[in-house]
Image (tube, rainbow, N blue to C red; front, side, top):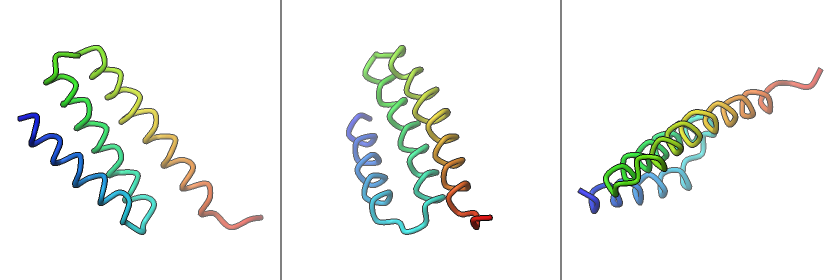
Length: 76
């Protein structure tokens, strides 16, 4: 199980680094954080898993999407 999660992490990391669209990269980063939370839970660290899910997949994803949307707009 742990090996499968680490393989998924590796695949997601390569995809995040090679993808050209920012929005897609942010969504993949959120998925990466969710898999990290699952990995931490499997490794018997539920407090770290909960924090990773809340901060990594929740707050960080919101901030990154907000920043990507703000930088795409035309200057007034």
